[in-house]
Amino acid sequence: MKNLLLPMMLFLGVAFAWGEWHFPEKYTGPVEPTTDFSWHPDILDGYEARYVDQGTAFDGPCCSTIIRRKCNRSSKKAYLYVHGFNDYFFQKEMGDIFVDSGYNFYAVDLRRYGRSWQPWQYPFNVRDQKEYFNDIDSALAQIRRDGNTDITLSGHSTGGLTVAYMAAMKGARIGVNRVVTDSPFLEWNFSPLMRNVGAPLIGFLSKFSPDSKIKQSHCDGYAYSLLKQYYGEWEYNTDWKMIYSPPVTFSWVGAINSAQSKLFKNGSHITVPILVMHSSRKIDGCAYTPAFKTGDCVLDPFMIQKQGMKLGRIREVCTIDSGIHDLILSPLPARRAAYDTIFQFLRTH
Image (cartoon, rainbow, N blue to C red; front, side, top):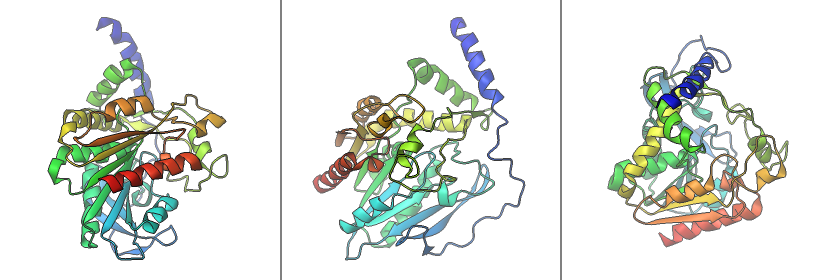
């Protein structure tokens, strides 16, 4: 332990040095909770959205947002999508594909993300992943009110972790028929020392200093591989899905670490079929190269595969050749393979 003490102190000293960073500056305006919860046209053509009051959290009033597009023909099947970190629902192509395939499509922008982000909130912050359970349950309640009886719950990256964690903690009470995950955040993409010592230590310290922050690498490779204005195919709001992710709080690290730990302690409690999809290769680096469009530059797909095999009683763990981190935003061949895998899973289970 003495041999680890000095590097730990240096690491924590650097982390605390970033603790005063604000995004983009500390908010001093009025705090006015959302009061309009009616359906309204969404920012995506053909979709509608409504806010859901989620009460008062540690940082003040908060809300989530439900986005939906109903199938043109009568259907009782629904697909609910939960986004990842530094993200929000903008994947109109995905929603359109599910609607064209006979599914009522829904998505949720979680509290402090995208449509739900309030100016007094630090973006993407959280102190316990269970906070998101209410956001997801609100969307599921709406899906049931709309008459759907066959429901698929899906999530990407941290959203994949959250939906799997929710299924593990609720067991038979999860209230959906199956779970689909796209590159779920099942393990830190760190060295063993950071995974086993650094992250848990930060999680412990978050109890005393939850809003201290750790700066992330100034990397543009992933964003450039996605955005049409650079080398990708997609357009989205870069104020909501930023090119450079802001620093994460100690509490965010603690929440992720805790959710991962509890998920695997309770992974056998997932009673519905679960699909875990991941890329075929890991991409290292920071600045964009063409390789960023051929693999996962955010998480380690081999860790996802290993950890995914521990989840649930009925599981499928599938590799998508040359898929990027968000598999349904991959170049077309990998994207088609991801959709084929999802629909085969839906037909089977």
